[in-house]
Image (tube, rainbow, N blue to C red; front, top):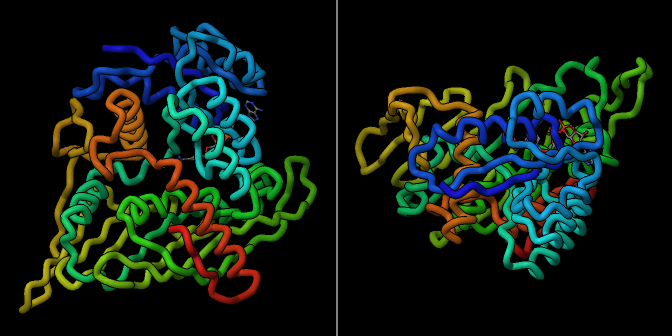
Length: 381
Ligand SMILES: NC(=O)c1ccc[n+]([C@@H]2O[C@H](COP(=O)([O-])OP(=O)(O)OC[C@H]3O[C@@H](n4cnc5c(N)ncnc54)[C@H](O)[C@@H]3O)[C@@H](O)[C@H]2O)c1
């Protein structure tokens, strides 16, 4: 088993998820490459102890990422920092010749994303991909296989979304994710949008235009000192798009919501076609709904999809799959691509640089549509 030595920059919520996935790499049965975390970096020293206590392979602990990038032992980096730092740190990682799995939105705005992509194009020797894990749920993988087989007939409509209720409570103190300076103008689209676009982009569907309605439902929040401060980020976004595949155009609704009553972390996709329709939501992680129509009665079927992921594992096929499993699968996909040079399959691949650019094109058009209350044309998706 070849070990690939990783550094983590940003040791918060997502940094810990990677560390945990790396610690249970033994779960996977088909990998001949494994991550070994040798270096960690956070500007806050408070973040260090959990990592040091749990990961014996760590040899370097720093508050300045430049020191980590100067470390020749570090071959690859996972970077999970606030959005305003993506451009600076991602470009530095790539220039240092390290492979990079960076978090979405891969640049706080379109200009930052373009610069990251420019620097990446100058360093083809490093594998740069963007994190997004939900399509690794087995039921979503099955939907991906059906898309690849072109099994839907003419697509009638697509609805995809990611719904939280993490901002439902108006008393929840503001943090960087609710501050335009650190999270960006996209608001909830920057946070949640990549997850929603991931499968439509991998499907190769073109998006021609968008009419977006963005909502700032809670414009003020308390800060950590109890003062009431302005909260300008968009809480919810509904994007009504005209999309197309080779069979023609269809409406596609993409929703990203941080204030969705009753939802905790619900990612869903629904494809309705003349021959086949499917629905999946992480609310019921085993349940894939399918309807095959060949004339006659219309019957929705419910299939229990068990633990049948893209990258095989020790878990029996009857068991349930969850969020941390999707993170592990995404990491398997990234390491697989570093090693083999290409993804296992279209939908078992991480988000590419081109797909991050498409997301910025879409979210920038959505901001314009919302401010002008008109439809924005899209040319590069
Ligand atoms: N893939 C997913 O499901 C998912 C979920 C949540 C967040 N994210 C993304 O992950 C990224 C980080 O989000 P998070 O929830 O982990 O945030 P977080 O606030 O929990 O962690 C961010 C960490 O970055 C550190 N940091 C800030 N400035 C730094 C610097 N200059 N150098 C080093 N460290 C620095 C902070 O101290 C903090 O520990 C964001 O891009 C976010 O959109 C992805």
